[in-house]
Length: 207
Length: 242
Image (cartoon, rainbow over all chains, first blue to last red; front, side, top):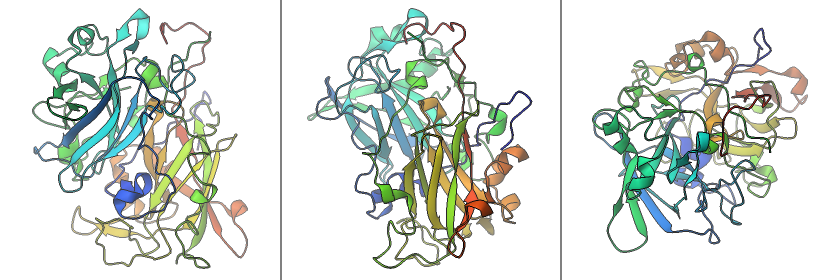
């Protein structure tokens, strides 16, 4: 490991998570039981305030096929707009982690997770960010994890003022970040399909 | 109150591009539009935190964490250790490091792996740990075997261990692979060769570390990981509201 002329190190290069990412990050899905506690299954514990929601979707490749070996991580604020971190803007409820891991069904590519709907949170320069989930996607064939965001389509006014959505030059691409509410019984459910490539390609961010 | 500072822009020349046709799976899984560059806000400069309540002390010992009592997996016993640092050369303490790998025969314990090399009943193939106050981590495991994979008809992966690291912010999140110095498969591997910078590939290669070797017991390799660094807050940088 060598420092440059100014003494800085260079970030370690990324490599694909590969098809067997589950062994390390979700071994139960790989087919074996090893840890007392797998991480990332409880995003918002029972004490977390706010509306309980389910988020479901698929990740779709450039041929239109579902990606069946993907792993997603979510990082979100609580209903008050605070992240569970010392610089996260304020206190969070005991048991609210705001972070989760989600894997797809190996046969269908469907994924889903349960959480609480986040609140708006501060943006830069005094702006307010609309409620959103930060998502990070890794899989075989993805060389560097992809960052994106999911917004709520039924937050029209907040979305219209969101500094990140409005920064996307192509208005027709902003809709790729909107999850529609699905009518039905059970918890409030939002559908969010992520298109890696091709028609309706999801907006991904360099953060 | 001190406002949290931004992280340095990612040096994309260090990382593989999304579209790398010799690694065929990337063809249909790579975005065609450029990434949209985002000024970091609170959700980018924060990230999940983990503590010793999340993991068990033995989770970093792959020689024993799935073995039958009194047994151990087949293969070269190795210590794989190093530090997690940031680009400012500062250690990243108390951060979660997770690994997974094939067994000594090149077979993964995964329902989707059908390679003919056998499963080792005493080897799970995953481990996790938190770095100490100075950013050190260490695992004990067996050296993984090379294995063939479906890309071109005769492609083989060099021996490697997958690493997942968090840092303190979601923008530092990183998954990579650690190779072992001297492996002749490294320059032949289409996944390794997705990385355009030879120096970055060298950075993914663990070095034999005789000083960390336990004589008559376990040989050691050292693999240091560098995560993105952040600016010092000498001057206000207009991240109001965070």
